Length: 202
Image: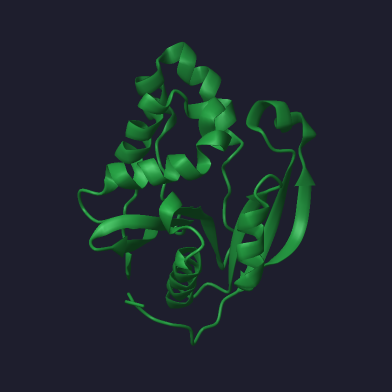
């Protein structure tokens, strides 16, 4: 398996499919139907804001991050209105705003990990996290921040094993019926300045 930085050229659709498979339940109310959501995500990807895992050249996992004002998933309000129409887009914009997270100075914000179902439990997520940590160290960040929802305990357990600690939990019971979760926990991991560098082939 190869871990590299950036979404490979030509793999944007595959990256969007993995992302939707991982986060479609949460993003569905804002981006459904999937037939529009996946092409929209693919078209708006910032390919240089991801680390990817490839097996025999095929994308099997990725982790997005936000740094320097850009995240893996992009798209302006006008992009949303163009794809979903004026009325449909206006309804979706407030929902999309709920997912916006801005890093504090010295932070890299990780947008989550998406791994192909057949590759889960094989250590792909850990490899991706460590490559994101290497990016953060090279960019002079002091910590990595992420948010995990209460309905994803498996992801939280992975983050804890990789050195993240919960710093606060925001309870959002008003979102449970709409988005499927009722609390969001923010987690931090300090950046080791002497961590690994560059792409690796485990």
